[in-house]
Length: 183
Image (cartoon, rainbow, N blue to C red; front, side, top):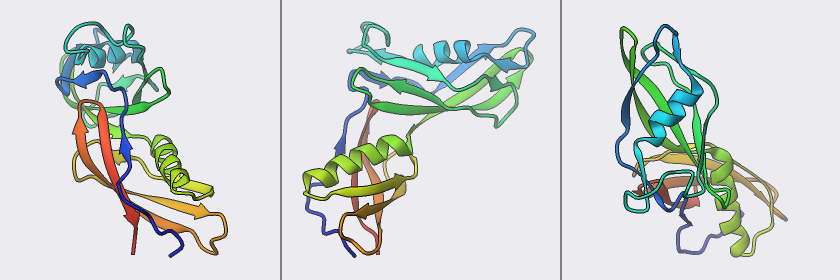
């Protein structure tokens, strides 16, 4: 064990002015066999409120993009990302739950991408006086109790440390997590 972490746990606030008000949507694909990235982005954005229900994502400085179209097949998924003006990223993973003719229903779960988690954990370690040589984190689901791991190599340590990450609170699109040296 190379790291000796001091409390408090890391806090992470992403897309602070946005709240996901529902996580299910239905989109018509017409004669296509997939929901286009643009339609998917619009459907997800329509389920997010900004500043207490006023405004939209664009006015809040949040850019929502989807990696690809969503196939009109049950259990198909694609990753989408909301990025705020400060570079904070929250992931949305729509998963098709039903296809009825031209209508595609999906649930969009939240997640924190590994790169974003690594940035936040790295900043916390730096605040504690560590020089981080490398830090690799797995993504974590955006729900209380979800867990992930990060592997941190700090300057002067012979071996990397594994950190156990736990989501402690989800408030809209904000996540608060704690971490500790595993083992």
